[in-house]
Structures are given as structure tokens and as C-alpha cells.
Image (cartoon, rainbow, N blue to C red):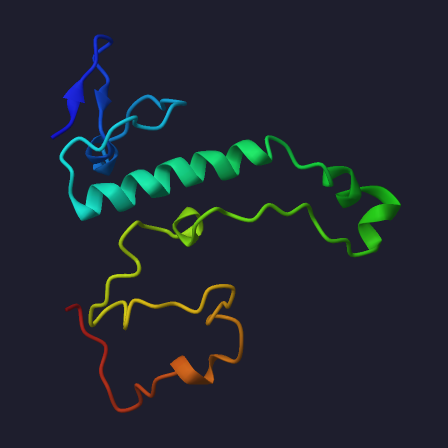
Length: 131
């Protein structure tokens, strides 16, 4: 369980599970709250996200997006994450389910790149409903 600090903020990885909007806190949680595999992954993700963001506080190649330089493609600055969790949408993406698949995405590959034929469906002969 998350604990409340003197300033009223919650401490513990579980406290960032909430999707209720609120003030942003620059510091990641310093404890796990209730120690569970989920909170450990969540804390790892939050800390890695903050570290990755701190490595690039601004875009050093932004000037290359304007003027004559914009006509020549350039490679942007890069920073490698300390864990794949840092670039994951959620801390549970790797857990297998019928929706997410086997839970082992190919790191460094984007399965969305490529032709759309693999996701096209044939709805001919179907009627439009309000369901």
C-alpha cells in the first residue's frame, strides 16, 4: 500500500497506477508501497522513464529541422534506455494474454511497419447496425 508523505503526496509505485489527473511530481516514487511483482515492474518503469527523459532535456538537433538544413535528412540524437520497460506503453506489456499475444515483443522492431494487407478484413455482405 502507498504511504502518505507530510506534503500529502502518496509514496510508492502503486500510487502512480491511478489515472486520475493531478499535479505532476518531478521525483519518481522512492518505495514500492506494497511489494508485488507488478509494483516492482512499475517502479522500474517509472525510474527508467525519468532517467531516459533526463538524458535529453532538449533536442540538440532541433535547428536542423528549419531552413536549408531541413531539406537534408539527418539522424537525431539517441539515448538507449536502461530497460525495455522505459519505452513500453505500460509496465505489463510483456504479460501474455489473448489480446497482447505471447507477451514477448521483438525489441527494436515495429510490427506496424509494412503493408496493411495483413490487417484488412472483408465486410462485404454485412449490414451497418447501431450495435
